Every structure is written in structure tokens, then in C-alpha cells.
Image (tube, rainbow, N blue to C red; front, side):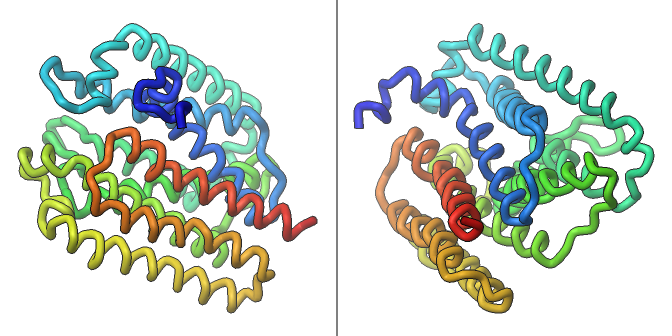
Length: 308
């Protein structure tokens, strides 16, 4: 338990510094490739996914630094500004170099990308940008983050797109094959969308006081804690589990795959019920967000066992 102590500097660095989000993204991308029965992509793809995730989340917190705050995560950013700036600079530089190199070596394939593929590649980054906002003469000061009830689903949509569509699209793109999402991709996208959206609703419980003060109408602000848990989180989790069961029975998945992929949803129910009690920031980062990594690990294990 000492490893996950709130005073452990390494734990804070990994979780507050958003490196854990990067790990989760890579793991979920690997899960998606295996579930599509495809070989894994090159290490450069996963490295780019990792640094892009870390840089995106770090940018959001770097712009939210306040001297007077009770938020433990913001306090950590205040105390480690130089380290955060150095990390951000390394991530952005590494990401730019990797992206430039991949564009260069695949410049011939870029010409062959269809309009549908361009839409798929541009849709999720566009939503990610709109989440934190734009400030222009055309759109004004607009962001999706202030739409409290919509916020979890915007995040879930963006994550589901990145970790479900991109790994498969990149494989087909690299091998000069046209990519058209099939029923499996749509289902896996829906599963990731529901799962991550539920995690975001849980995370809003942590930010209840701040959201209430800033008049951001999240589910917990509007419905209260108990109703959010029993009328939103648990029913959505059961819906996601039911959807999964219907699909795998229809597709006649092997029993071992079904059981292993069911475990994350059961843990999601357990963690959702635990939200009745007051939890620390690290609990949300380690346990709640940790369910993304748990989901990926069980999904990967299900495919490896099935193919053994």
C-alpha cells in the first residue's frame, strides 16, 4: 500500500503528470488491434499516441494554475512548474518529430486517403480541441467543457475514437488498404464510449464543489450524488454490460473471452457504488481512471488466451 501512498512522489509524478493517461491510451490501442485480429502497429505509433495524450492533458492543467487553490493536482502543478514545462517541451518535440517522420515515410499513402478516412482522422482531434475551447471571431469563446451534462460523453467519444478507430485505421493506412469501419469496430467504439463516459461521470463527483461554484451543470450538480450513482452510473453500466452480452452471444464469442471482458464492467459497478464515500484525488486517478487500464488488460488477455 505504501506504493500508492498520497505522499509517494513517483505516484504523483505518474498520475498528476498525466503519464498514466498515456499508458492507458497505448494499452487500449493494443487491445483494439488484437480484438480486430490485426498485428500490432510499429512502436512509433504507440510512442506518438503516448506523448500526444500526455501533452494534451498537461496543456489543460498548465493553463489552470492558481496560487490559491485546494485542488491537490493544481497544487502539484504549482510546485513543479519547471518539471512540468520541461516534460511538456519534450513531449511536444518528440510528438512533432514522430509525426513528421511518419508523414514523410507514408507520403505516398497520404494521397490515397479517401474522404471518409479524412473525416475519421480529423473528427476526434476536432472534438478534443473544442472540448477545451477555441477563441475566434467566428466562434467566439466557445468550449464543450462548460456543457456539464454533455462533458462526460464528449470525453468518452474522443477517447473511444482515438483508441478504437486510430489503431485499426493506421494499420490499413500503412499497408495501403482502404479502411471502412465494420460492425465489430462500431461495437467496440460503443463499448469504449459507454465505459469511459461512465468513468467521466464518476470523475465529476470529485469536482462537484468547483462545478457548482462555476455553475457547470454536471449530472452530480443537477441530480445529487445518490441519484447520480443509482439512476445514472449503475444503469449505464448495466446497459453497457447488456449490450456487450447481446453482441458476443450473437457473434458466438468463446466463453473465456466473454468472462474476461465482463470483469471490467463488474469492477465498474463496484467502483461506482463506492462513490458514496468521500475519496481523495489520487483515488480517482488511480482507481477510477485505472479501470481503463484494467479494461485493456482483460481485453488483451481475452484475445491472447483465445488465440493460444
